[in-house]
Amino acid sequence: MRALFFSLLAAVTLASVGNAQSPMPVVVPAMTPATTTAKSPATADSAPGSTQAALKVLQAMKAANEEILKQQAATLLKLDEIEKAANEIRIYTKRS
Image (cartoon, rainbow, N blue to C red; front, side, top):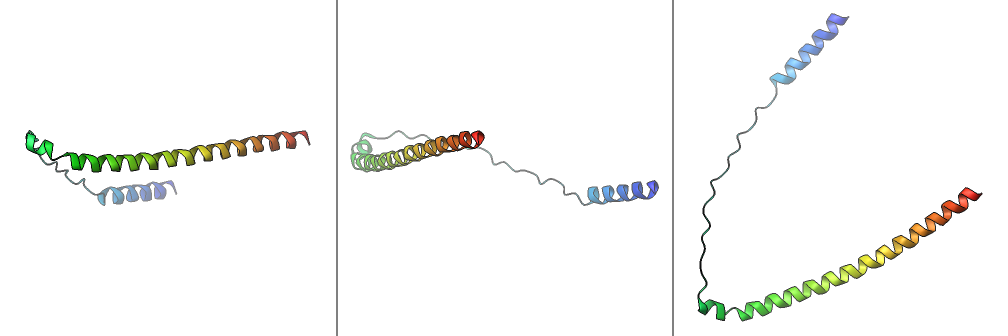
């Protein structure tokens, strides 16, 4: 019985090793040097329009974040109330 068990175990082990996949080679592309360009004064002067647009987007994001923070604060208050109620229930059930 032992010989049969060990021979089956050896056969299963060899079959699983035989079907194992070889690892795929990992190809990493070469890093190219970053190119830096200096902005000319002419492009710096034309940027206020895009700066204003970026400012408006940031203000909208700030308002959205403040709204989310208010919602989270309200949720935390509700969770605190639920926790207090659960603690009271535990106290009352222990007394009974």
